[in-house]
Length: 82
Image (cartoon, rainbow, N blue to C red; front, side):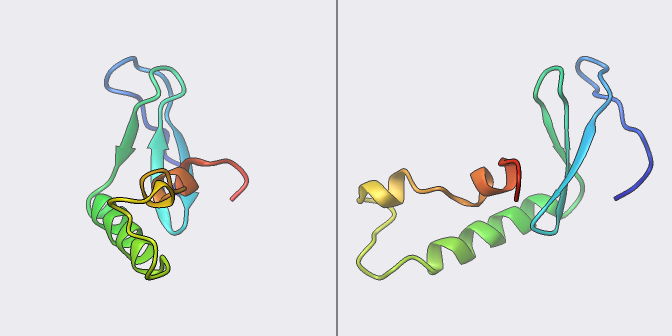
């Protein structure tokens, strides 16, 4: 992670930098905004696709409770202690 300090464009708070599963994310503790660098959104989408592909065949993410309310990659990335 970089030593550079970034400032939130919305509320001007100092952004916190986190690395989760190889993706660096800047998060604003003030307004809770999330900022991604170029290519990081694509990395998140690819990770979510890999997660969904790993679900058992009997779990249809569109129709089952487990699929609709799964703990997906976005929650995993933003959860503390990963």
